[in-house]
Amino acid sequence: MVKDIRSLYNEGFTEERYNSFVEDLNSSEGVKIDFRVCETPLFLSGELTKTLEEACDDIITQLDTDEYRKYAEASIPDGLAVPNREDHPVFLQIDFAICDDGKGGFIPKLIELQGFPSLYGFQVYYDEVFQRHHQLPENYTAFYSGLDKESYIELLKKTLLGDSDPENVILLEIEPDTQKH
Image (cartoon, rainbow, N blue to C red):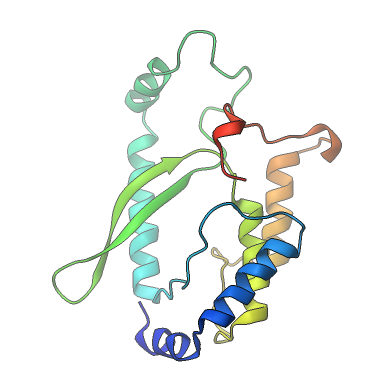
């Protein structure tokens, strides 16, 4: 983590500012967020970001094998396979815990993998609202791989919609009543 930015953020933190931020998240788009919003963002150093990217690449390499595909295919109950699906998920969300490595640094520990883009649009919205309430250095961004807000949204739309009319595209949860919005 980046200690000087963490210190600056902590110095400016107040319950009032946090509550105002959450209220803005809940009111700007007219949808109440029904999960806890963390009080603080992560301020990742270039080194830790690289470590996380390498961990992601290592996991993807393990998943991108014929052996794993056969194993995964066998786990899908009969009659529940998605017709015309891709050879691999279009989205892969990899969640890590950031742990002390015992040497003064940090290492990622895998928590879970998801193949559904439920928060990919929210991330853009979250960043917009966050920027209204907190000052961050100009060189800090919520986007990776050289993307900015506009190129991220363009890529997300292209990936989700393809050549389809947005009116004909939905993101469907298998058990929507048990999912957070």
